[in-house]
Image 1 (cartoon, helix red, strand yellow):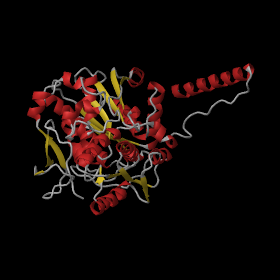
Image 2: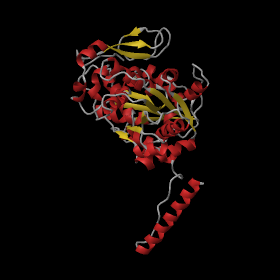
Image 3: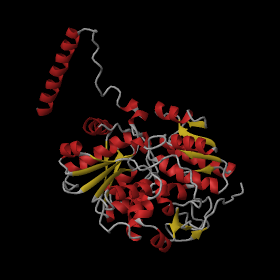
Image 4: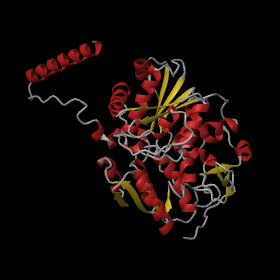
Length: 432
């Protein structure tokens, strides 16, 4: 298709696409791979212009969404697709902190993000705004679930045709959460990596805008807003330590980029922030490479309940490893049982029901604390990226059952006593 850039404004601060490996620069089109070395392309900005024009006050005067940071995002229009995405709560998590032996713990809760309850709403809002500028009328994605939800929802809001691709074995909540927006949904018999390879062929054949393929340089920049918001919500300060889930590794690298950009333009004071990543053992190619001190990724075949993290050949894995190493962080993995315990731990201490990716992150947080890799005095931020209502299958059979009673006081009293007896027995088992 012919790409047409619409609604250009002189306020746009992004300059070019640049290869992360060899530095070759490209025009701001729908392209994601360097023609010379096949490295990934990334958006570059005019930071001198940002220093001159952006202040804390101009940001705070903006909308209560990711678009308060529009000068740092790769869109040319002053009228982006804004569905209220972003500015999710940064929750001071005192009860979870006490349980783990920490003093200053925060949860960045994208489980309540708009419109589809995951951090993917951020990246899709940016990608589809740029897709519209480039003249695309049909948008698509390869997804493990959350991205399909976001792409379908925001495409519907923007009036764009939408066809999305998922592995056929996804959780029912994520399938329903896509179909409700009436896209064309392709359920592929294969894992995410197979879906992604098919989508690359479709993108080349049909000329559609795939948010995480040919539009990936723009799409991935949306994750930076998770860094910006945390810095702003901490009173224009950076945390000491962050813990985030790892799938492709892109989210991890973009939070880092967001922190560095705020430092570089003078919005926050410089500070060393430690970056730690979380993977499920059933799909942990980044964690394995980190533990084995490799600088390359060995692809794996996913086998885990954490389907949203089940990318066996992560595109940004080596960059995530580099960030963990140079910030004195860590990358760890946990098994499926620990993931379920992580979901339950966050729910019973902070009232936040997270999906399996969040359970993975909480379980790794606990593991890092127990290994002495998090200082109790550090200001630690944990990123929760999706809502547990989408992955209820993961905890079915691992939570209690309701007490069925008659509509009589004595029936209630007997059930209450049974409940208290069971609670006492549970605590005795814990103490033993």
